[in-house]
Length: 205
Image (spheres, one colour):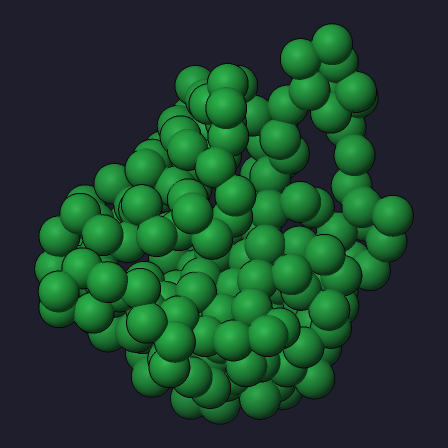
């Protein structure tokens, strides 16, 4: 089972997505508004602590169709910052949640996960997020500008929500092909990893 709001059973079914806001929630709010404009059903998780995030990525049967992660990142990890002494930060190393920790905790069977964090698409992160049965994972393999992220998401979800929707792989290929920054977004699946090369061609890596 997955998280299935009633909207997914309408005469014109809506895609459902959840957003985990780890960083400044203004980016997550923009993501939410954009997806709702595309007629999607959206749930926003305002993550307060590292344990909150581990709960979001360990939802098992309540996993959403899509999970967007709004966060800052470095070398594949997610930056959480400092907390008061009462907060458990044992899952962090120097204020960062490493891919290895994510891989040990994640359980999102069938979910497509998209990270807005810089370097979220490096190999260690891609492999970690695929553990626990995710259908696919998408992230940028370098430091990407803030404006490139919503542009990628708009291209991607527009193709998934149009009257004659693209497949997941087709939508990613379209979204990752429009300029140099978009080509940073890799697609990880359980079968293979893909990127768009400098010639605009999809290649397996």
